Length: 108
Image 1 (tube, rainbow, N blue to C red):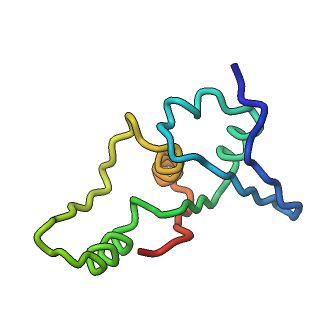
Image 2: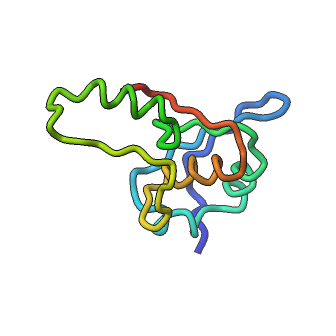
Image 3: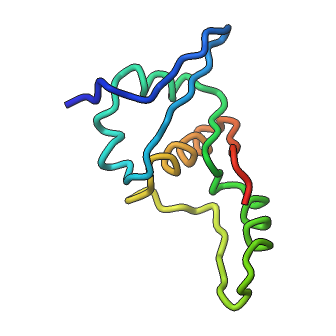
């Protein structure tokens, strides 16, 4: 089964840009069913930006600064598990592993 409906928008320029509206669900429930066009857009990309970038230590430093209750600790790590990862986190981690430029659209 392939997901024919998607939230993939192509911005006509050279090279093309894409905006992919992901869902906060496990990538295992969604990614295997994505269309060939979505997979090709991702694999041919050189830059991937997500809602937030879990591989960016600066994000976690800023996040920790935002925590009011300092008794609760948040560990940061760039060794993220893939199994069960949300689709957007999975894509940014795969992009990072493929040496693509990664970034985030939001800050803490």
